[in-house]
Image (cartoon, rainbow, N blue to C red; front, side, top):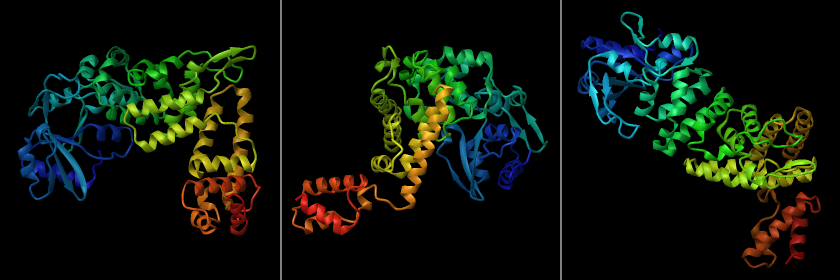
Length: 441
């Protein structure tokens, strides 16, 4: 196994002092998969104070010292070196009540979550230490818990979501008994902080295998996003749709770029459909569902402690995802005024993914419409057309200059002017704008 110079330096220094040390976990998994590891964590039979002594001439951090971890900086790279350890009971289903240091590598590997993460590398002998056949599972693209799956999940409920995240990101299947335990132990996720759930689930959502994981484990995801349950199996009874609401949602998630804002938007964009369903002779309808979906999106993302920027962008895209936008410059300028250029482009990506999740007979026509809107948008931008107040050839000070007192009326006049410019009724030239402002005094 190839190791970078800074990792080799760490191993040699430990060996020179008589200690055993092994790269372990994710770096080994990634190497076996043919990926370049992001970092190199190591495990050792040396005690934490002995690790510190070996690297006394280096910059070290001991924030994780009580758990046996010393972070060492070598050539501007950080390596975490952790003493072999045994973990006792997990009262809170998240953190061990006690960490016991050991000199036995096998005891350390036994406590790890999945077989693919329970592999160590012996640099001196150029061999893998793989007591749980993690290499075989990696080659078979299989996620399997070390030992009893239920016990591993009871130790740390976040491992449930990590298994789903690995399955989505790596494209691996989840071994049968491990999968069964995930469903049986799903309520352990109630013990996990919202922030940790949001981080893991966002990675899952952006994975290559997200659609299948979301389909197979919707009951698990519903522990922290119960709002998806009404969508599951909900027949849309509409000729424009060939999927139920949840299947349509998953198709749109798969169809959009694996970028968090877009994936979250697609997951939540139709959450308001079930409660707005009505039916007439033409079939099922969901009038105003975008409003309900927007409020549900805000509730979900706020509960999971997403950033305000994420909440604002996702809710704006959900709110506008079903808007009917005519293929005219006026309509597109109005859209640009509401959302801005960057968000307008994101909305078109949302619209495109939404179309791909509908009945096949609708897709070509809708995609052609979206392409036309994109072309109009680029024309407006390339010609520096006005679609926002900052593009106006007039300012609040100009309006004050014609004798209008500072106050709310300034903003009202500017909004009238921008709307008339966007509608093509008024030139965006200062002389014309000042003249019109005088009329509005």
